[in-house]
Image (cartoon, rainbow, N blue to C red):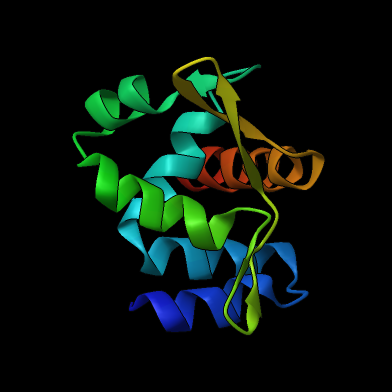
Length: 113
């Protein structure tokens, strides 16, 4: 899935099952949201990059379309928020992002049963 398609599809008001389907088409977005589901608070980008075995530039592109900022004509999904703590960049789930992660976890758990 290319970045432009992800931005358009993710930002739309989709039912939970459709959101999961969109995330599963983009392995980086899926991995990021699944990892964030494991954390109650903010996580450093360096830790996420290492944990996901993903270059920080790739991680930042993923965060761009899952985040709250507008990218050109497209509004980000609003699921994650990038924050600064001194020199550290931290990623935290928004309320909507936590809902998506809960849905993601429930769907994955149901599929395993």
